[in-house]
Length: 141
Image (cartoon, rainbow, N blue to C red; front, side, top):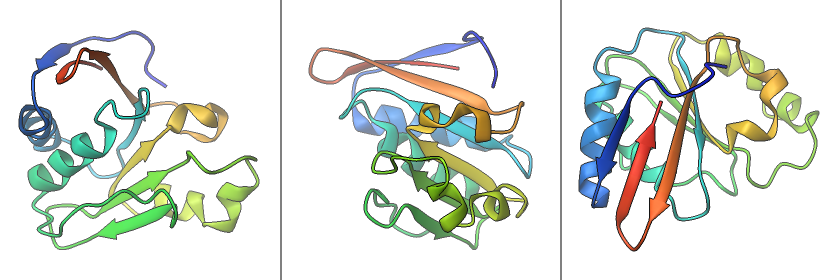
């Protein structure tokens, strides 16, 4: 996983978070894994909505908290949106075919990806979202 932020942006609304992520997504290569880290309500799902916009996936993005994985296809690259929040053991990743998604050639965006860091590729991009009050966020990668 990439250690230490190399860039940061400030967001004062969900719209700004989506715009930042949309710009970020435009240059992502196939096979990129993004680990989203932040407290509940930090804006991880909003960031993934922006990734979908930047990749050209027209579907409405929703949190996969209960289903673990949502797939969005039809854009420049497929987007595999995962949420590890409800997973308790690393072996549960095998039950959802996690490694197959990593090898599928799309972009894997993983909320709570820091729960199982040993299963993430070494070149995973870590995105940390820090809350500062009601709407202000710092997004670091």
